[in-house]
Length: 175
Image (cartoon, rainbow, N blue to C red; front, top):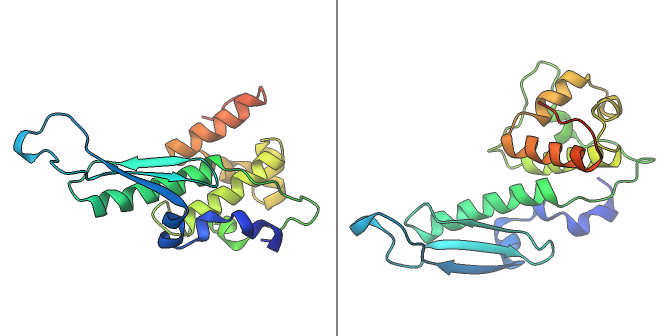
């Protein structure tokens, strides 16, 4: 990755640094549950100032656990929604992107890995720079379109994002 892109590389920040860029709200959610329902403000919402994206979690009775879940969701939203321009003339895919597209069919990194969402973001940035063309993106990465399509359709949130990007360009959705 070239140095001009590191200024908005939020996904590679530590959890503490990313939280420092956020407005953190705690609140109580209503609903069924009786005596086991949250009686304290354990739900957490993170609003990331630089991107304007937010994520929340309220499933657990622990504010700390909900904060971890909200942070994971925020990283996912940043990867899926915050695009960065690429200079295609000097672009070379980082090793993390290639780890998503291994030749043996099994990705070296998965959705729970810390390198997964930065790699997905980089892949989507290239995909958008190439006008959401699966064939051009695959050619640029020197992989076949089947391997690239498999990655782009592997996660429901990723597939929705890819199809929304393609729909904005009047292209057929991936399945």
